[in-house]
Image (cartoon, rainbow, N blue to C red; front, side, top):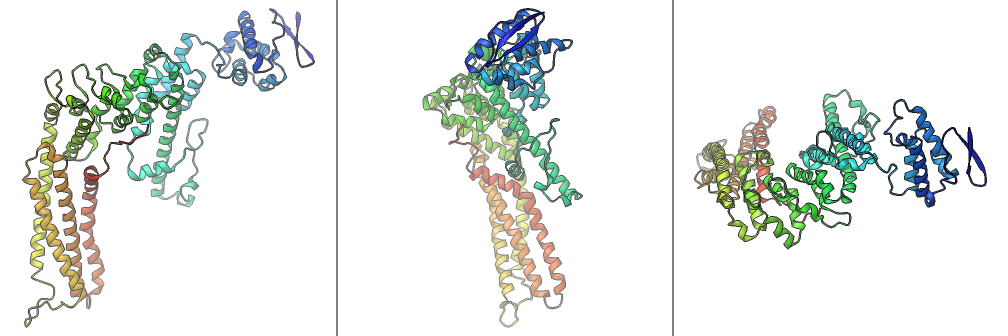
Length: 572
C-alpha cells in the first residue's frame, strides 16, 4: 500500500489509496483555485473509473456503493478545512461535488457535461412530470439539468412544448367567476408536504366549530380547489422562468430543435398570456424580436393566432409595439393569403366566443373583434383578398351568416316573449288607474282614499308601471321590426334589448308595489296580520325575474358600454 500526503493549513494529513497516485498539492481552498482543483480531481476520478459515480442522478448506482464512497473519499481528502466543513455530512459523491461547485464555482454547473442519452432521459422524465402535474418533481429536474428543457424526449416532444400545451397551468387559462376570482386573489399558497399534498389551516378561513355544517364543508372544498390551482400557477411560472434562463442563451438552431418556436405558437393558440409575454421580453425589458415573428406551419404569427382564437390579452401586446413593427406584423399573410383582418373574419371551434351566452351577444363580440383589428391594420389590408378572392369583410359575412341567423332568431324570440308580458302589464295598469281601491266619492268623483299617503304611492307606482311597460313594448317592437344588418348587432339591437329589459323589470317592480299599497289601504284595519305574508309573496315575481334576466342584462351592458376587452395600455 502506498501513502500520499496532502498539504493543509500548517498541518499534514495522510490518505491511503491502494491504486493509482493522487496528484499532489490539489487541496481546494476557495474560489481562487476551484477551477484548477476541479480539472485535476476530475482527471483522477476518470482514471480510476469513478467519474460516473459523480455523474449519477440521486442515489448511488446499483452495485457501485463502494465506488461511490471511494469517489467521495477522494473529494473529501482533496479539500481544505473550510471546503471540507461544507461536505463533511454528505454521504453521496454527486451531492458533495455539486455542493462545492455551487459554493466556489459561481454559475458553473456541478457536472460539466451530461451525455446526450442522459439529458434525453431527464427530458422524458420532465415531460412526464408536466403532463402528470407533478410540478415539484419538474422543478427539481429542471434545476438539476437546465438543458433538458430544450431536449426532445423519447416521443419527440420537448418539455417546453409540453408546458405550452397545459392551458390550465396558468391563470389566463382558467375562467373564474367574480367571487372565486376575489377569493383566488386573497389566498396565498401554503406550504407543501413532501408528498405534494396541500395542507392548510381551517382556522384561517372559518371557525373550526362549523366543520359539521355541510355548507361550510362545501366552501372549504372550493377554497381547497382554488389553493391547488394557485399552487399550480405559481409552480408553472417558476418552471417557465427556469426554462427561460436556458432559452435566453440558446442559438436559433437550438431553439428550433428544442421546439421553442412551436411552443410559443401553441401557447398563443391556447391563450396562455403569461407564457407568451415572458417569452417576448428579454432580461433588460426589451422585446425579443426572435419570437415576435414566430410563425406556425401555416405562416401565421402569434398575433394572427390570437385573433383567430380570440385571445384579447395576447393581441393587446401589439399596442406596446412601435408603428413600424406593428405594421409589419399586421400585414403578414399566411399560406392561404389571409391577413390579420381575415383572421377576425374566421370562426374556429376552439374560440372562447362560444362561451358567451346568446347568439346575438356572440355576434356582437365577433363584430367588436373585427372592428378592433380593422382599426389597427393598414388601410390596404382592408381590401386585400385571399387565395379564394375574398376580402376580410366578405369572409366575415360568409362565415358569420349562420351565427347572424341564430342571433336574429334569439332576438326575436326574446322580444316576442317580453312584448307579451309588457302588454299584459299595460292592460292591467291602465284598468287599475280607473278602478282605484275603495272606489270614488259619488258626489265629487274623487277617490275615497285620495288623502292617504299610501294612495299617493299607489297612483305613482301605477303610473310608473304603465309608462315603463309601454316603453319596453316600444323597444321590443323596434327589435322585431329591425332590418338585422350586421352592424345592428354591434350596438343598436343590444341597446334596444337593454332598455326593454330594464323598463320591463321596473314595470314589474312598480306593479308589485302598487299591489301591496292597495292591499294595505284596504285591509290594514281588520286583517293586518295577513299583510306581511301577502306583501312578501308579492316580492317573489320581482326576485325571480331579477335572478333570470339580470346576469344576461349585466353581460349585455358591460359588453356594449363597458371599457371593452382590449387593453390598449397594457404592459407586458
